[in-house]
Length: 304
Image 1 (cartoon, rainbow, N blue to C red):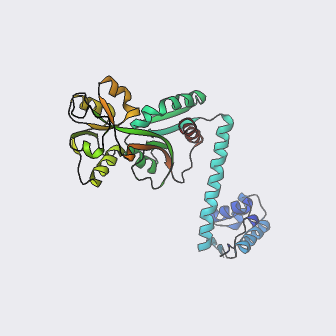
Image 2 (cartoon, rainbow, N blue to C red; image 1 turned 135 degrees about the vertical axis):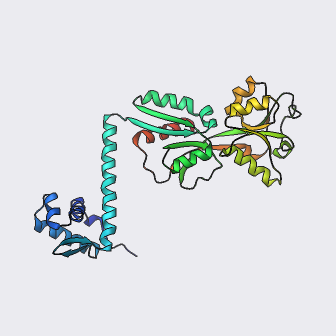
Image 3 (cartoon, rainbow, N blue to C red; image 1 turned 180 degrees about the vertical axis):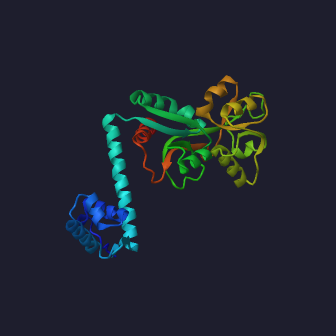
């Protein structure tokens, strides 16, 4: 069905007049606020109603009220003016040199592998922008984006990304890490199913890595024997070095700890051991100019 409204026949003066009339409750007051003669204002509103093909205002001696169609027009008109106000503010920020604050939440893998160099070059190019970086578990990052607590999130695939705009930022390879004295230490590669015969050290709930490995164990009809759960890769490495279990770790993010603690990294044969890191924003969200610049910079620097 063809829309009765031709956008080319509606101008901003008329929309502004319509909003002023509704907010003041009077065509006369609305006309005065828009610096229009009463006759010109009345003609504009009549032509507007003719254009949309229905009455937008109920007129009485007490003033004007909105029809059901008028309510819809009013809501869209206000959103339109808010959008233009935001556009004006953003253009003003660009003209002065962008300033502002960006809330970036990232998981441990991203903070270790990708973000330090990219953030350093961004802040050097934009010294007036402040970036608040929070290290969080992937599930918490997704919730923060949906709740508007974070502007940009970088996390490992695994949690549901419904309601988010995502793009692959990089990949990391998962390995089994064990101590040099562990029975698996001489293996050149291993399947995840084989590793399930041993005790595990893992991350706490909310970690995409824990979700990934737990789901994989369930598909095999088994359970991970999680002996200890911690909140960081560094803590995992320390527990593994103390022979409290083995662990699944991203090799790029943990290479320094693995080497320093004398751990052994055994490649996993499963295809899921190569996982994607995602950069995400809330679907439909309008990013501030600083956040837009940071997102573009991270994609340019990290996506190869």
